Structure formats: C-alpha cells, structure tokens
Image 1 (cartoon, one colour):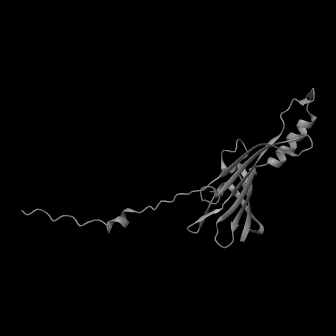
Image 2 (cartoon, one colour):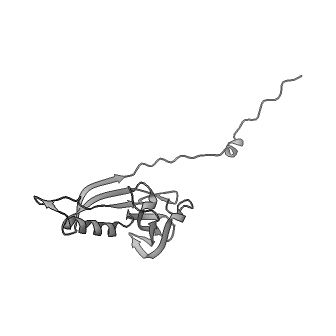
Length: 167
C-alpha cells in the first residue's frame, strides 16, 4: 500500500541500507507520511522502515510508529514531569505511544503475505522508560486463494450453439 501510485505523493522515502533478515538479503527503506498523527487511522499518519527482499522485491517486514512520536513524547513527558501532583498523582496524562510491526512470513506464488502483526501501546514512566499497556498480536495463516478467470478464458469452453430450426 505504501508504494502504490495512490499513496506515493503523500510519503517521503529514502534508502537506509542493507540487512540480512534470516537468509534473505534486504534493502531497508525509511518512509514518512505527510500527515500529522491524529488517531492513526490513515497510513499517511505513520513513519518507519520497510525491509524489502533484494532479490524478489517482496516485503519482509515493516516497523512503524506515529509521525513525530519521538518529539511529541519528549515534549509531553517534560510537561508531565513538571505538572502539579496531588498525592503523588500528576494532573497531566501520562505520555503514551505506539509501535507496530508486520512480518511477511507466508510465501505463495512468488509473493509474500503477512504472517504476524503486533501493535504495542505503551506509556512512558517518570524516567522515560516504556511501560507496556496493551499488546495485540495477530497471526495470519490458512490463506485461501481463488482462481479468477475472465470471460475470454471461458469462450473456448462453451459448447457450440444448437443449429437453427428448419424453415
């Protein structure tokens, strides 16, 4: 989805380097969406890295986080530390963030498909360390593939039309 013509104008891409993931040589590409993070519903609100198999061009994994999260968390953490505390509890919300990881572990027909996804929601503590608040892990398996044929494919399979009735 990131590299489609529909989304390319809304992203900045730059090569980061090369890595080996398992036995796969990969090119690592950083991406950054052109929209400020709101709720994370649009792909343009995210930034991260994509590992692309250098030989096949298939995705190997994607790691992402909201655009500007590091800077935003730094500012919110500073505000939170300085906020008024009543009985040791801050009057400001604890800074929160997200990490997303998608691994392409299913290979079929020369293409790779997602096999595992993980979303981690965390909060920063007073020392700036991440405290895991929620982890959603998904495993994708038992893909079902359908063959789709066009009308032209079926033309050769049609039985001949019956002869016209005699006059």
